[in-house]
Length: 517
Image (cartoon, rainbow, N blue to C red; front, top):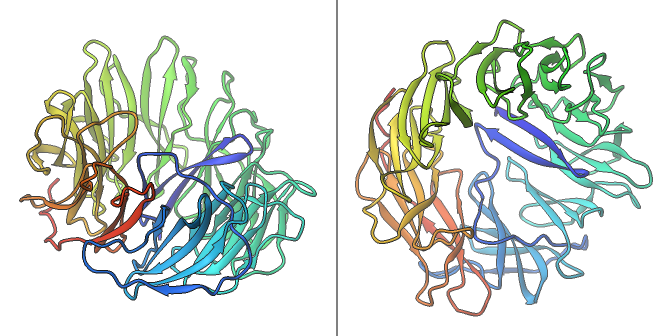
């Protein structure tokens, strides 16, 4: 399955921005800062069965940070049901109701990273910010330590093929390592590395250093290859790997004749400039994206004098094409459709501060306006046939949900009629492109508090209410949509005991929306 991965250095760790055709997780964090916790490596054999009636919670005791396995069979979550702030990692089989304890926290409020493999077989977690990394079968078993004894491990990443885990370590010496997910001897891939990422085919690991050097090395081990030799090392902390794993795109330098974006074979070679070269260029933003088909790179440049331009470039180094509308606008965001046929972006005009949504074909041509509003957030249906966007185009400060073709046309409102201060605050399209799950708040603000959850068919029609906040008035605190488009999980404190319960609600089945371009 194709993934586009983007990596940015932040402190000694990474902030990951991922666009994926098939997402590993369908997880939405809402309402408050999620706690990160520490788990023990001692295997636990504690199991229980919790077959619930409709409307009853499937897990209780202060549930946080829950994720759904890709196959839709398991929920993995943290809970402090036995001792406050001493969290346990649980796996719940959603069909049988069997709950397996995967680990227990030896101290309160410690740090944790949990990853579910995309084949739904393993849970990978690390014990604290600089402690051990373990893998365990999602159905339960004995945890296997992946890092060496007395070796810190952090910034772990599971390979796309679910066979390997990579991690950074700074004790006893700094380096980056690869190890089979089932355990074994870790292989040192390099001495220096601050941001690390797998190629989509899992054959290579790419790493950037604090000094700005960019390296690639086979996942099984080998000699690291420097990819940005003889180029300015500044700002080489942000890079992207092409979907076919053949090239790495990276930014090099600022304010020099070598400023720009470059493409280089992942196995090494001479980097090729793919961005425009202009004396007016002040900075190339680190938000460039590679199209899912691997043929193009879209990037923004900021010019001296406050101007901006949006470009479509080829990985082969052909002349870039400017794809933004006339001057005088600020480009706030952009994305590429899953079929790589279109780029859509939002701009704000400097004259009237109105946000507009534009599109343009990756084959070139004139940009076209989709809609105009003062508040826009948009995404594609997985089948790349429609845009779903939130906008207050009818009532100021009240966001509603709309569907429109990729080239524009008449927009269709998807949400139910709103009243008072109700506004749409989140939305997620089901993976089958047949419906959208959205949430409503009566009090939108800095903290997103959900009052109700709905499902609307993309063909149009009456939305179905899936959930609402309990009678005690406490909000719904989280929402996750399964990858198989069959159900949602959500959390709330129905019993007013200060602990969230986890609930499951099946989704309705709809026909796919008529294709519209």
